[in-house]
Structure formats: C-alpha cells, structure tokens
Length: 297
Image (cartoon, rainbow, N blue to C red; front, side):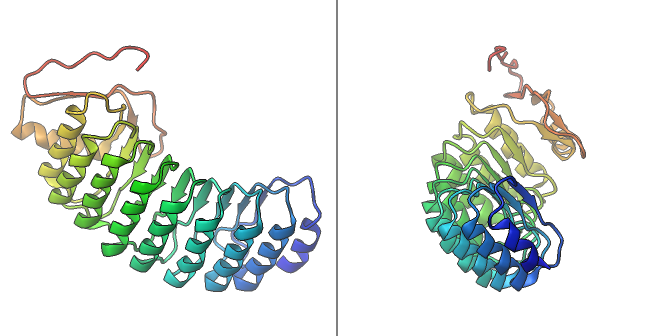
C-alpha cells in the first residue's frame, strides 16, 4: 500500500505537507517513502511517526536526507529507533543542512545515540527545533549530547524530557548554558535530576541570557535544588522571563518555609493543558525589593 502511494507522489507538485502517521509502514514502507522524497522537491513537511520504521527505515530516511533539499520538518516519533538507527540519523544530520525541525521522541535510543547525536548536533547548522523526549539517553550519552548543544549556535528549542539525564547530564547542560547564547526553550522534565544536579545546572543558568522557557517538572530536586534554581534566576538581572508550572510553585512553597523572606513574583503560569502566557518573572534576595520591569522587556 505504501509503495503504491509513493508512486504518484513522486511527480505531485501540489502537496506541501504530508501526514502519514500511524500506518504501520515498517522498514519497507519507510524505504518507499524515502525513495519518493529523493525525487519530490515540493514537500516541505512530513509526518512519519508511529510507523515502526526501525533500523532499515532509519537508514533509508538518512540516505534520503543526504539528497533532499526541500524538507524543513520531519516527524519520526515512535518508530522503534535504537542506537543502531541513531548512527544512520547522526550521519544524515552531519550532512543535511536544510531540516529545521526534527522529532525523534518516543523511541528507544540510549547512551550511544546520545554520543552520536551530540557530535552531529555540534556540526549541524540548520536545526532550530529538536525533540528527543521519551528516549533512554543517560550517563555519557547525556553528557555528550549536552556538549553538542553547547557548540551548536542555531537551535532555539530542545526537548529532552523523559530520558534520565541525572546528575551528570544536568551538570553538563549547566555548562552548556554558560556558552550557548541562542537557546530559548529547554525541557528537562522527568529526568531524575537530584538536588546536587539541579544546583550544578543552576550555576550555568545564572550566566545564561537567552533562555526564555525552562521546564524541570517532576525531578527529585527537593528544596535545595529548587532554591538553587530560584537563586540562579534571581542573580541574573538580564535573564529572560521564565513561565512556571504547578510543580515549581509547590517547590517554592517548600523553600518559603525555610526562607520566609524570599520573594518570587510571576505572571506566567503553565497549567496542565495551557500554553505559556505573557509573563513577568522577577526574583529578589531575601528582604530585598522586587525590581520593576519595563513594558518593553
């Protein structure tokens, strides 16, 4: 079925966005789509998520990305991509400088994938939005990925939630924020980040001037980690506004019990099903006045 669909798409000039999500293509179907995309120069966005493409599909897609120069967005979420598949994808990312949005969430990529993708990201100049959530990137893979992000000067949005980055991953990402001056949105929710990992991350956050949205929900940071993040935001007078969610405010309430004079003012709140709103996040030292922000900030 997929092969039959691919044939007319080769010469189709009217379809710019193609959604083929959840069609059980598997490797052969993915290969057929890849061959089509080598010839079609009109499709700019494609969704191939939930198709069980596997290693064979990843290899076919990767070879296609070496030739295709029109795709700017590709969704490969939920395709059983493992570390072996990541090797093919990393090679493609090193050479393809057209794709701006890549979704690799809900796969089974681990530490080796983190190392491979980290090296590829360091060389890529096109990606603006990268989603690696719901994988298994930990340990050395998490550190390598963070180092790649530190070198990259083009990515604006990165989602690493649901991986297990842990203490070392958080520390490495903190170091990344010291040198990265373009990243605007970072999701680190549910990554087993402990208190000392959050504190290490906060050291880098304090020096970063571009991050606008930071999500760190449901990490075992405890009071110490939360306080470290609050202080990091407070001590960076040029930091962008950061909207907070319920987990953040719950942790802040815990900190208030120990430091009753600590003040946090925020107007950007993210509910479970809400998008970030316009916000005003400014934090003061214990007993100090809250700084006022101008309207154009």
